[in-house]
Length: 355
Ligand code: SF4
Image (cartoon, rainbow, N blue to C red; front, side):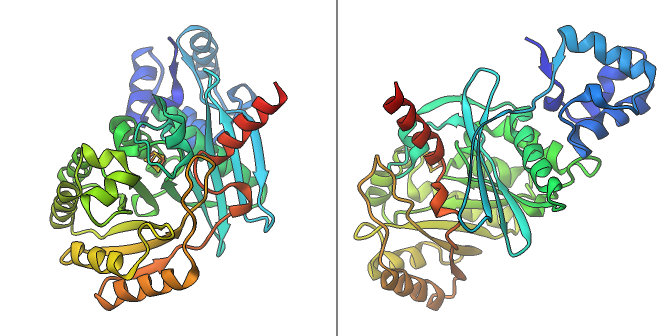
């Protein structure tokens, strides 16, 4: 199988080029085209010197390919601020990438797996099941896609959230390699402080981030305040219980001295009462935490409903009164099926209807 040039770090690319007898400066030129310019077609470059051009021509026939993901489907929100893309992978799998432009700071939400093994009951991706991990190049390619879209409008991608399809810490090595490439200052240059990794609570991954002194932001989806309540929403809780998760979060905060963002999806009558909020506040005592309350994105495969506004207001006040910063996440692009997996689920539904 040919290797993707987008799978390679700067050093790996340089090593390949140098071992074939080319000067190291050619690797910097190629890296610039791949990751700074985010070129879709390397054949159109006019600044490649003959040795690099010849090397590429030969290698692209047998050894290498690039990851440029064609658009299978695209939806624009009514407020013109959210664009959601279904991008096609080489094996015809489709993944979602979202570009959001609020308060002048553009954020891309990217996928790390095709499907997801975690099976969260309220999530359209979880309802589809797991297909495969994405390679680093397929993760990087989504970022470059978002950058090209924004560049056409004279805008720049500032932030990245790994909150699309898949559980990032279930694909740890590929995700971390991709983030290393994306944050490389010679390329896309999106710094670690602008990148957030969202996990449903893969404890070994959180502990590994703590050990490695990770500089990326960590967001943990909590959603349940007791073992049983959480397991009913997040089956992964059976493998990594809430008690282990909270212990891992404490370790992460101690080792990295970083804050953790805890996401709480408010579901009417399921986890949105004052008692739930009090238990959350107790669980998070002593952790450097920030709680994000998120209105539920209703999906066809789950009959839970969005909480009424007053429930969210009471929940918010209790968390704040406990000394834990708390915000209600702005709803973004709800009219384009905002939750991950929903665009793909919609497309599947349409395909079934037209068959
Ligand atoms: S919410 Fe995230 S971890 Fe859970 S099933 Fe969906 S994509 Fe996977």
